[in-house]
Image (cartoon, rainbow, N blue to C red):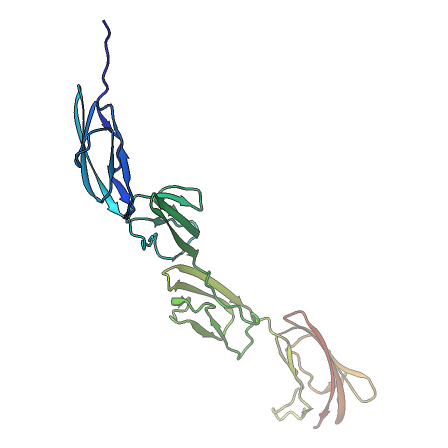
Length: 311
């Protein structure tokens, strides 16, 4: 006695096929383990040949029972355009974006430039191309995912603010939706007049957030002002000869009479000459000075000149 084990009927049919039109003939098969296969177009056998689109049914039978399956045949559109998404911008290069043939109007096999074959990908920033193919032809799709351009504070020509000076600082990119500065201003630019650190919270037109800050110092070039006359006559007006210094961190100031004798020497910026020469009052006349300075930038300078003493 021999015993035969019959496997149940199974279907390997696709849900959808595509008909290319014209004189095209589509051969469909895929019912396995069937001893009698009947197609809704009247064909009996493992394979049916279709010459039109539509919805079709097939029944496979054997001693284990029957199986019914349904599939559709679509008319191919020779003008079909593959839609895989719109070009987009992401805030972070690691952000994932779902791209691909979400409609899947036709049965396709997919070949991406990333060597993937799925209809839909979770993609990071980059350029993507895909070819979707079936028995009637192929269509291509392209999409670009870009990372938002960094936005920050435009670097000024220098980072120094001197007394009485103002600087306009601004966001360097025009694709700005809002910019909130550390002192509360909501604008693309802000006018500052003091040293310190200034920051901006920025949102671009893509909704991406950026933060930037910039610091200014008061390390300004040295400035001096030396008077050309003084009157030490004890009337309370212009009785001392003083040098006005700005942004000077170190200096030496010496005064000489017309014979070259030193009558005054100071390294204290707050010390002025009162017109005394040793123990005597200096005589009226022209005196000469030498002023050596080092400013906040470390730059040195030497100044020479003359002034008149009148009592």
